[in-house]
Length: 191
Image (tube, rainbow, N blue to C red; front, side):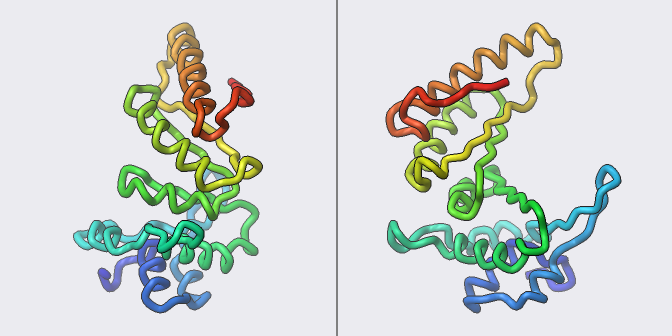
């Protein structure tokens, strides 16, 4: 750990894994305040992105010991959430798949809903083929709350509508194929 650098979620998860628990003040001291659009927000950053960041990410244990047991990362995140959620109306978890693909999967058991932001391209479609069955395997049908949001869509209204209409259909098909998140044509496709 980079001493003097801000402590973040990554550091807290590693401390939890080593010690089995976290002191409430350790979590509170890691939370930073920021203003955005005239509102005050509390943020628990990932941690200092320095020369040790990738090594610290690699130390996290996302794997479950047994199918019915949570991973150490899930246990750590639940511990942090248990300590802070009484102080907040909404808690948003950002599991950046680009840094570690398993991070998002570990968050499925602790979140109320899953929000997937994707660029409407073939890579995103291929990713949905992996992510959607994983969500289905980890959540009961009643707990499969999913929001899919397309980003980097063309601004031109005519092109935008064509792109979004096509991707709604493709994403609907991915969500409803056998073994996927819904596995039946019961998904409502909204705008």
